[in-house]
Image 1: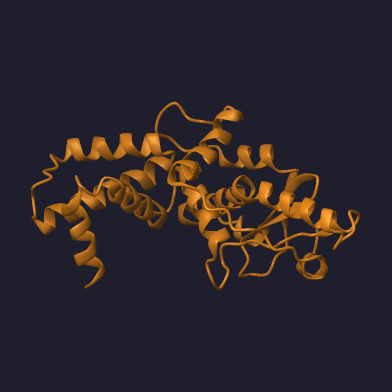
Image 2: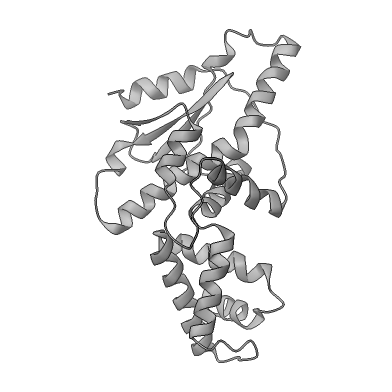
Length: 248
């Protein structure tokens, strides 16, 4: 099994190559992850947990459980002309409790997000450097940028990976179905300004998303807020409740 120092040495000594920021539309941020799920016949027919581990196996060269530093849950190694490699910290994938399992699944989704949203950008950057003859073609395959969700600063690459992970684990079509079902069962009133009732609805949505898709409460909450903002003209009271609660 590879040691963390060996892996970090390879990463630190590899060529650095800047990626050009690609701004994806909201539609692209949703469709690109879903396209990959459907491509490998992993898109669920109803709201239920997604087999994210099978997707990771399908879109990467391989998934390597190895010894990484404690603050590093996962990383993606991009390789010119080949599929990326997903590295996962085995120390974070040994606990069997629900919270740890959900955190681990999101980490896998996050690394899949890097591949889906950024592998093509990496390949283009390599080809551009070859044309400019600033790096030799033989050296480029050794370039392995390190992406992980514990970075000190969440840059555009991390944000894209997190967004893609959320759409992979909670497909928007099924998120809509779950939320609409919660609203119906709890007699949601768009005109109500009752803070207690609005908070109850929000808790019910977050809990349902978390349990149905097997994701953390935090991931469910972020997805819920993204959905409500998308239809802000309908859910202004729930968004107001979120704002009041967050300001306390």
